[in-house]
Length: 521
Image 1 (cartoon, rainbow, N blue to C red):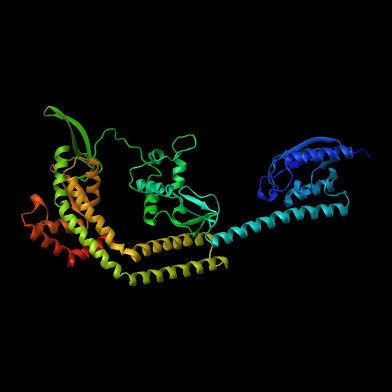
Image 2 (image 1 turned 30 degrees about the vertical axis):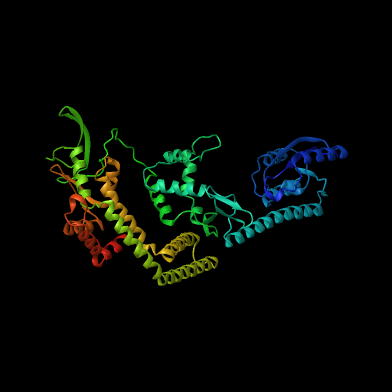
């Protein structure tokens, strides 16, 4: 009987479970020496760096196809586990031995003869290889599950964090975490695109290694990364991390809403700078208000008019400077000068100090809600493990409860320390009153438009007159100033002492209650 000729096969996986296996170069050297000593002729060599845990290796399949087309050839490999670590490829090799397409298998580290005993031992070797791979995967997964239970970060820290080998988790980077917060706050304003935000980050020194702005996909991944809320993601599921969050839930959710809104942006046909388009509707027919340039009185002006898209409309044009004058006048009705906003801010500070003393009950309630949420989460996990709920429902409900935990933790932090559930919105509102005064004297049309949109509703243009209703609490504040004349300068003829008395009245009773409720809502 003629000696068979051999296909030499060498494989090195790039995965961790093969890190102690010889390199391909070392396998080739040893196998060639072995073939020389055994006087075995090599037909062709096949090498590849790919895992054998799943079927589908290109070079292996190419070799097996050649074997199926041949008669009486052999395979030369370092060990059976180089050929297969899954039942499909292992069974394929054994089947070709059964039909005598493979008449010899040679391994420097393993004995084989094409006999019933030899094939049985080959099956055992393939089975041991598969068991080793399966067991190693299970050990790795068990370790990952334990890390997730401990809230540890599993991989390299995301931008804004650094890995801490001692605690086996991550912690905010002193400088980069602030850049992350700044990026989210900028995008939450709604004025940025992914491209403009990448340019904004480049100005702060956050670039690619080629010194170019980040790709839009990279910016999008950062803006949707829940790690900044203190979550660890693994296989589409989120887990509580024991590292410090960088962002508040409110800021993160605001960014997600903007991303959702901009997912399918509409192409803008606006070619000119008309700052007040999109603000007003026609008071007669309800159509949108558009703008155009026109010549008159020795110059070129911007005019605003009805688009007439809903039919005939008799409304006339309004020049932009007159429109701005009317908006500024409306802002004056809710404006206060720095002197009085300063006094109001001092009163807020006094309330803040009182709130610290009365926050214990609120904190206790929050702790109770936190405990209840954790119990719901534990029951949910138990129900999923027991097979009582499908995975899809489990993941949705789990993410909802995790967000609820983050929200409660944020509330506890704010309310427990300083009672900021209404103090901070009220302080922000007073600063907006101060801003109304400044904008009423400003020529920053973009800021005026944004502020009018913020404080008003039902913005209309009718008979060359701009009108809008103030939303809460601005409606109450406008009525209060009109009835008690507590403004500054031309808005008030009261003496300083009477102004202070009016402000003291404002801090009491219905006004305080309505402002509180409006800001909490």
